[in-house]
Length: 142
Image (cartoon, rainbow, N blue to C red; front, side, top):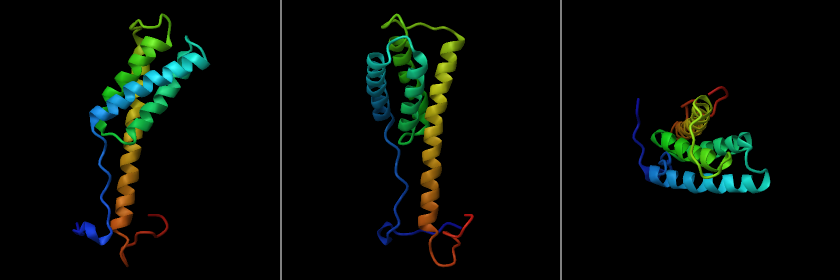
């Protein structure tokens, strides 16, 4: 049963995801910055470090994004990975299985971040709205 609760009563709505273009702008700028920092510290030609860092970036961006933003986020991260983290820098290539695996890894990270955020927000909203006496919220195991 759905019970309508006025927002002025202390109940807070589930946060709205950030607009897709803002997530993509953050993915573009963040991925380029991250790859530049990694190239300066670890060195170019070490894509495992870059893939790990970009996957973490995609997951973090997924925490505030919609599911629809995940493919664009993964693609923008992959463009930075492919274009600047592996030699020759500035040249996009397609190496079949490797790049498909990288794209899948980045997409999976973005989807995991988004899914995790949705579960956490839904659980928090359930606890806030169902915290009345006798509702069972707050009991162990729920």
